[in-house]
Length: 110
Image (tube, rainbow, N blue to C red; front, side):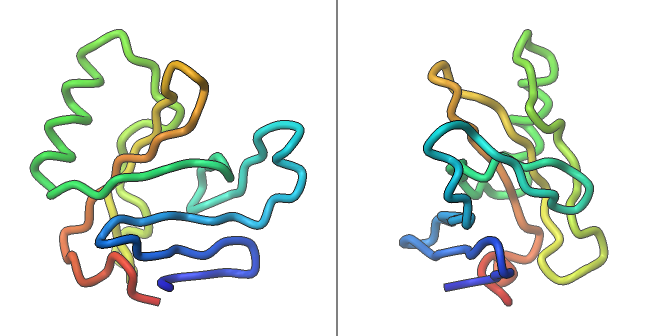
């Protein structure tokens, strides 16, 4: 287990982050939670990339016709767990998060 709140918890799945949000209503639709100023899909899957690859992918997506759910940004700036993140949707409507940490030790730091 990694960081957590009363509404969500991060799990380390062989070096990848699985985020579980408490959201019983999700069976009827997708809810969001406020995270550092953004409404984040409570049901999403994420991958963690090296910082340079994250920046390149974010820029490549900006130059395409891809629509972001959440534009590339730095979350928790100057705080524990500072990270680069952006969200897109797959063709089935699932939320996908692409993130990076400049300090990889912060991935599951509480």
